Length: 362
Image (cartoon, rainbow, N blue to C red; front, side, top):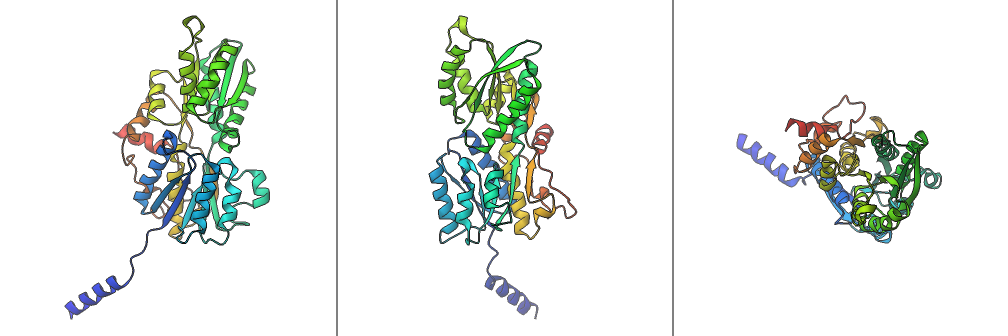
């Protein structure tokens, strides 16, 4: 009888199809050779592996038409995923939502969600498009503010002081919010004169070309505010080419978590560094994992959230983060952040601190 029962159980196990892993596609708006978006994807892959998600990442190569084409293929193709994560880069979010109608795919926006004006037309999450289940963005305005405030602080009592600002792609919410933070800091420090703000498309070479002109036009500039690390390094390269007698003493801000910028913060080449939003996609997968298990994240902090991920990093913290980012698994068990592991959890606690703490422990 025991052998019969064992055989029956084995037959039942083999005859019942194995549960298929939740399938998730992320449309990465960046380039495959772009350090930030590569690191962003790597953090997502570590999270997906821990959470048991089948994750596919497709790069749009900073091409809005390619981005929409990928979305169309994912949402209207024969084989569709359970979830699609997208970024409202180039304000493509509304078109992605239109393509999702009737697809059965659940959508989640990360990094930048639809703007207030866009939502007046398209509705918010779980409204006109009920399968758009949520959004998660970082405190972008605060990031711009933190960088500017740190730069101004390091300028000391020097009055007046001049600044140049290098922003990203003009029609992206992230760039606009970081600029808003810059303007808030400037309003608090009227002794700082912003001579010019230009758009360098997040690109090192573009920023270098612009700086070639601007550093000569404004020889008394002391502060360089850059909305990411690549543009800061572009300005540095341009400044290094100036004749010795014309070389200004410049203080630079930067944002991101590349190995290069973390090292530059430690050596003092970068005076103000803010990082943290590279973790957004990975934390979003924690929410998706719970949702797929029947635990709606909306009941634990809301369906739309702005997470205080950005932190100003000093030299010591930059060294700690650099250390942990070189680990394949980041020293994290992503399952411990889920509602499945914490049934009584009222809200998710996403931040950069677990990575910094892990680095300290090592």
